[in-house]
Length: 301
Image (cartoon, rainbow, N blue to C red; front, side, top):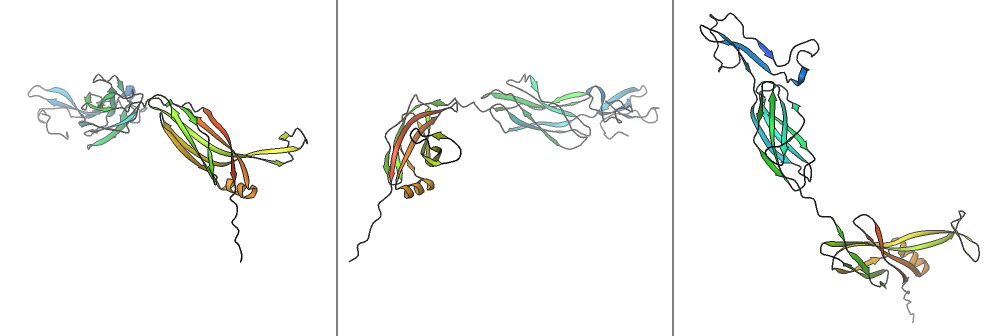
């Protein structure tokens, strides 16, 4: 018996053949009864039936998918996006995929996905890649059975435009001024519109102490010395072309501890610029002196 009512059958009294169910995938011992189809067949079931009275003809009626919908796009980037769709296989398995391109001629397609046999809406999705940036992309869902190809409606999305390449300005710095445990320095950025200066400011102290490992030898006393560069303060700032700003850079905990211990701390201020290529360029190197505040003595009467 057929499970549909829209196929006119020859009356049983006149028909001497049965209406068998077959498949687009041949049944052999090597394809697990239709699980692995030869030649890329999906294995779409179909019915053979007779029609006509008194003359009879042999016809085939196959499942075909229904309600094929091209869904929305998500995760849109400069060259990729995820597109979605859904289909009711209407009882059989179908291969689904997406066609896409810059026009409705499409020209590209994702790999096929085989749905499970189902008689309700089945969602599917695929990743599109290699897309041109800042471009309108057309796409549509496609479903294929062994007996037909079916298309969803056309949809579009626009990929993200590639941001303009970063432009480096030319940085400069004035003389830093020390006040207490901090210093301030005016930095400027010059260049064409849209360019920037990404600056890093570091305060360092070079400590020297006796060690067993030879690092350097003094010219006079031939002493073995070990040198260690200690960061005692840091700051960073990004300026736009034409901008000038005063940057405050303070001694950190290590720097304040050395200042309390020595009372007079000589510090190197290095200002560098990080270029768009990742290269670091020197802008200014200065020597600063920090002095510990004199303690206040109370007078006793």
